[in-house]
Length: 485
Ligand code: ADP
Ligand code: ZN
Ligand code: MG
Image 1 (cartoon, rainbow, N blue to C red):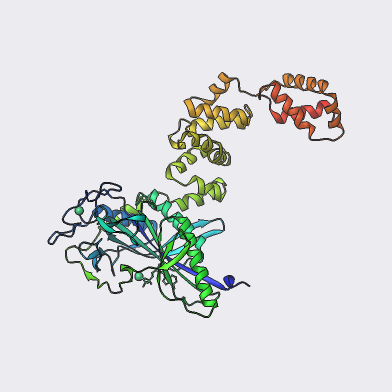
Image 2 (image 1 turned 120 degrees about the vertical axis):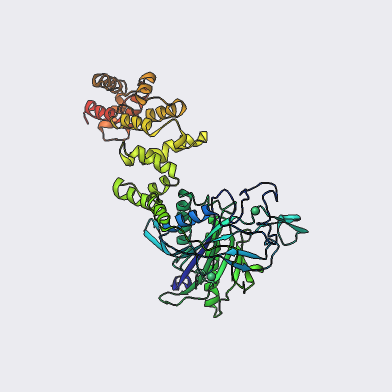
């Protein structure tokens, strides 16, 4: 057994998502990404003495929605604290966050994997405000080696929901699966756009390893600075290997915060505010507790749409489509609706194949999405019916689809106008086959001698002669009959 196999990785994650509100967490400043620096600020988010914060109700609503989707208990009362530390991106010298009374507690998130279900305990989810953004001037744009740093307060005060999981994940791959499905869920609920590159979803991973079979938790490290799933997975893999090597060498893992450097693929200890140990949490005296009306909390739960995981499960069970198809077709709520609409009209498996395959391939060239295409589910269903009835063959169907995408209209009419219908007149096909056999005695003899491949030659000739309008399967049958095979 290799060293790797004798250890079990243990991973718990903390995810910050930026809530999709119009304004900041405690003031009326507009949220913006990419606007000129310091154009969305006010005394509250600049931390001027005497300015009073007011909790954004929409942020609370989105946190409750997320809490419901995560199966959490929504706290009847939650409060804010001041998390104290000094850093230039924090003008008040404290961040308003939730501490011992968060808005959401104790849930579970279920993700689907090809191998089954992945259940991850949710410890808590709490509301807080984001810090401002430091912009480092100088070569490289990084803090190290910068000539000076300036502060852009546009981001300061942005509403965040921090979701903390139990240490229930046991591989980097599972952790990424969890992130992806969580992101899909939060996006579809409109809680956040979860754009990792723009920083509206940030994930920190806590990683430890322990001997297989052990129930005790090992010493963990915390990995930061991963703004893509690829980096996240690589960083966790690298950290699991690093810890195993330390333990195998008789050493001890130290509880560090590590920073992933995507260029070198290595992890470095992080020296920053994160290492300030005592935040001296104090109750925030300027904010009233959050006490949501229970009827409102119930209404939000009742109005929750079907979650992506439930939709996938239902499709697999009721429509008989594969895990992979379900995964791809539920990537967005719009695509899921498109597929469902189509699958209600035709065979769901054919629907899945055509949407995933030809439809997306043709639309990609035009940079269009299925749900905004002229090829509506109704029109595509009309086309798939013709194919199913063998009125047209596959190449013809692709041509009709191109026309539907280009101009819309009706598949039956397009088939007629373009003369794409398959030849259904048996005698016409039979005559053609008889002629082909007479014209190619050598090949006909080979077929009689058992050279099955020659069948393809005859079918090809027939398709050529009919400009693709023959039914290849029927031609094959007729050739066999005529040749006496
Ligand atoms: P801290 O005191 O460092 O903040 P917490 O107990 O609050 O640690 O946990 C923070 C995150 O780390 C949670 O997601 C939790 O599941 C995870 N975690 C805690 N202990 C471990 C461990 N030994 N190995 C892996 N993850 C862990
Ligand atoms: Zn403001
Ligand atoms: Mg903690």
